[in-house]
Image 1 (cartoon, helix red, strand yellow):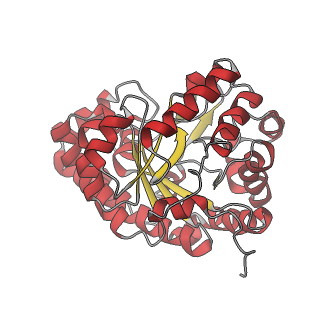
Image 2 (cartoon, rainbow, N blue to C red):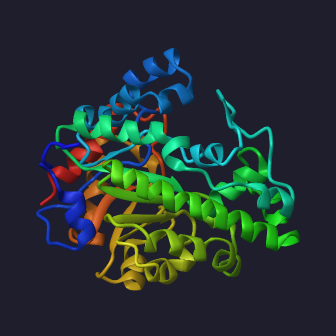
Length: 342
């Protein structure tokens, strides 16, 4: 399939370490969530109908490009499509979150999992990517993504969201061999899924380890890091590693070879640059709650943030996903503050 030529390659250039006129900007969870037009689709279609229907995936993914002007699109999907492909059904309960009726409890459960053929089990994702690439008309690059193995283990063992994922951690400490088998199968599936997304047209890739911050530094090195490293090593497009809350492991995250390291708001730009240097791109780390502030404050804080990180080897983003009730004009002000940066 021949895709339109890319017009705005700021994100890709920043990830490759090239000098840019200004840093690129996008927002995690920008595909839907806070946009009124997305709310209309949410009322009409179930969550997984939205994920599995290519024209809806494209419409939702491209919305923030046309409406707030981000420099990159991130695919509308969910990290839990990977457990689904591995045979673990997910119910997305409105107002509650994900529920997995069946969970991994034992070594036997982990060993019974078959790594799926992602082109069959997740073919709808690839169709969504192709449709989105055509509909973007080359305006900005498309970022593919997946959840990291530790984060997916949390859901596959706990069966639902949690503040501490104590059941998942108990599983790892009581049954470390079962945890290793499960983590490796998730990793193998994720590598195949990532490669399929890239083949379908994803021009960059982000790996989300949303629950990395629940692990101690030692446990992170056992249950998260080796699997992140495997996935990054197999990625053939510019990539970003976002392990929320793992500020203690910045040197290790850099050592994976990732092009970009995403930061939450609990790290100062100065500390991040001191540890990471200028030979890896940093992404982040505006607190999403700050988008409730008056627009002049958003503009001021955004400029100050860029000044502190530096315009090169930097991607402006939030420190986590945009919140659902952030006013659209406040999100647009954040984007425009970056575009007007000098």
